[in-house]
Length: 336
Ligand code: ADE
Ligand code: ZN
Image (cartoon, rainbow, N blue to C red):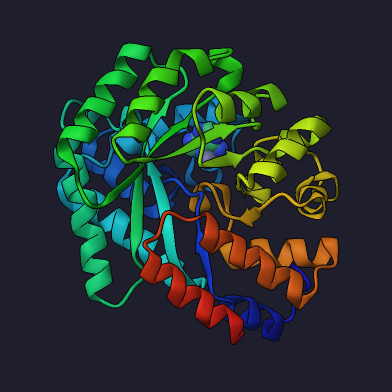
């Protein structure tokens, strides 16, 4: 974070917090991708220095398909998952929900149980090494069919894997159009089976996407949701129902939702009473670190320590962590 003093960064690192909006697909190290591409005889889409330059969400999602296709073994998937937990520890986070979308990973097609098992192996190893626990949110892609979503829910419900905490939906709403009705049944069945529900909306859709996430998909949490700011009645609904938004400021800048951090609505949403939290979305690919996101917003919006504590508290409350983990983090927050 430019201009933040090292002591201020250290204090933000020490702030007890959770991350509730990050994708495993966004955690690839560029050197590792180059090495795997060379081993596979697969050309790089562009030189390494420009590998993580994207023209917007559609281009970014296309890149994910390329990067994830290289993570073809159990060891690579476990290593990536372990690495994410290490990042959390480095940021002073005590828990995270991480999203994985099987459609990006061709090597694991029709092998979701094996995929979850490989990720779980990496996350278990991380916990055994004292790194933070991570829950898994398995994602539908917006451009999939209702049958594909139904099949994913059937598989997750039959699997009942303790690592899987939620059904998620991500991808490009601008390309998919209005899809809330298409996925309503899958999300209803997931909720009835005890899965939590987290929904990307209000990034590549406007406020109408956020409204559908609430009314049609039963969202317990909304990923991004920032464009809700365009509809005051919707903001009132988010406040009234206390539906949290997992906001990722740098992602919104890099993928072109807002041109300048000063234009970002996170502070206006917070002041309106929406339960906003700060997150990295695709940390390595978009160059976002959790501590720097807090530092950037604190500087631009003039947040006090009490504001920062309240934001961190939102992240813990919005997470799908168990009661024991939440209680530990809330206790630590009171002493920050
Ligand atoms: N998948 C990974 N990052 C995403 C984002 N920012 N929006 C939608 N889908 C995604
Ligand atoms: Zn996201």
